[in-house]
Length: 129
Picture 1: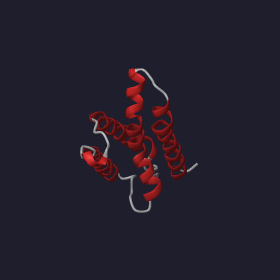
Picture 2: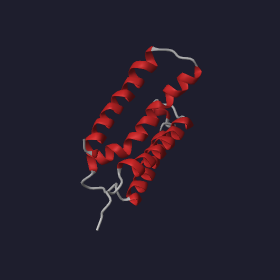
Picture 3: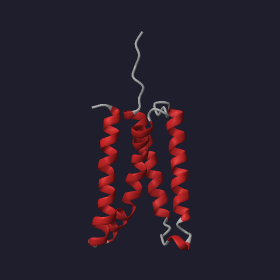
Picture 4: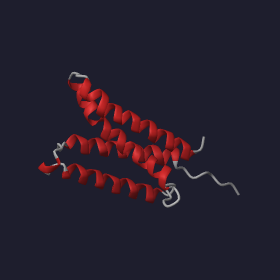
């Protein structure tokens, strides 16, 4: 399996898990506090973790995520956009709720994804003379 296929299947499976949590588990089942909190931040955590993988899957022709600078820049940009999205939820017209825990979960997810991607996924193959 190539890296692109791995990223594709991981992103698709992760999207199914996120939607199952958001629309299947959270509204229909009631949990005690630690589980309820984890289910509340899970979509942000998983979604942020999947962002570099989805970027590689869909935009590998345009971005070189093997370059650590570009991967780091992508992660910082993605976090900034996620934080802006969360701050925009303060606008009462949108009918959504702002939560600092979602920003923290996004930061943790992107950080974990950066380290996972840079150490295991997007390593440059060794070249021998």
